[in-house]
Image 1 (spheres, rainbow, N blue to C red):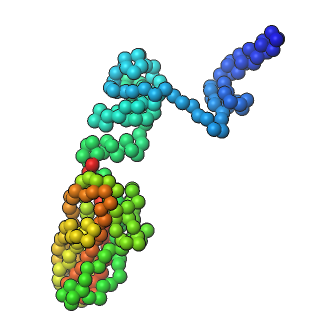
Image 2: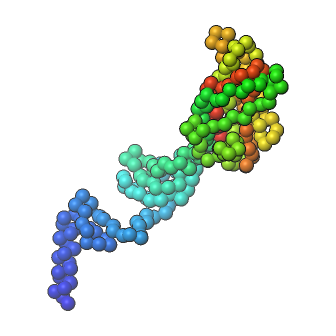
Image 3: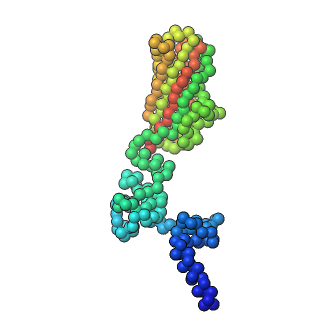
Length: 252
């Protein structure tokens, strides 16, 4: 029995002298001082609460540079974020960035967060304008035109955007339009919430390049599941969108 213990002790010493220790298998990793091997378990670090990033007394007294744990507290105003945290050489705690914490910081600073963006391409020609009795055209988007859709709010079947949470939003609807006759006229953009017009704007033709430019930029209070539709029309016949942009920002 003593000889077995001696062999085990000598084996452990050999591993430690080579600066390599493995838990869970015998597969040594030459570049690691400690290796954990498992197919269904993981390392768990302590869960502590940081209330002041420069506090060298709490939650750890005199923390060594590089000491690491999971921070359970969140205070974006003080740059404290839930997640993996370490004590740095600048004598402060630093927190691992993630999407949720970044969004919280942006919201706390009242910076609008871009949640939807589309680069609108050329659309089909609409034969009848408003002067001839034509109706508004609903803007459609192809998948390639959608650049950002953070909350998967765009429904291609209905050509509507569904609001994911109640808050303050900024809506942008900007287009460059053309008309075959190039005979002047007025464009109208309309953003609807459900079936009700929320905000509209008019545009005029530019005689230099025979294009019509229209811009809506509006801040609105919207609630969960509000449906936003973007529509446009021109007074003269045979008009179309040449290019445009839709951006939706969330403030908080």
